[in-house]
Length: 122
Image 1 (tube, one colour):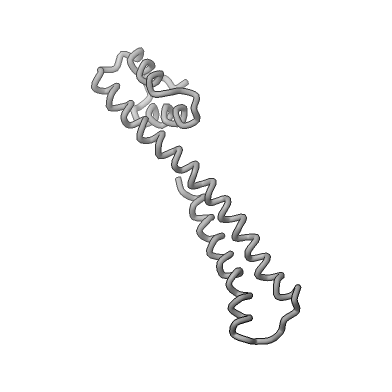
Image 2: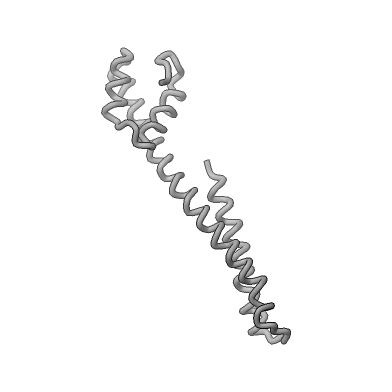
């Protein structure tokens, strides 16, 4: 529980994490803020900010999860792109063959890079 003497930014962040995780809803936040003897205008402002921040935290959880998925798919594609030419033991330097074998490798590197960037968002 965050003390009522904490600054407004810390309270907003705390309540947004509680709302985002599903432990509390906005009406409970409103009641807790009213119990702290805040003005009605301050309560409305704080609840609005908590709602916006909780929505952003939920969005970031989804982005982080999709970043994990992209990262693992990219690792699999890089592995496939490295191993696939050795499985079929193709040494010909046909342009089509080189494009087919390098495409999964390059796509895998891109997905690893993109997934890592998604996971690094805050």
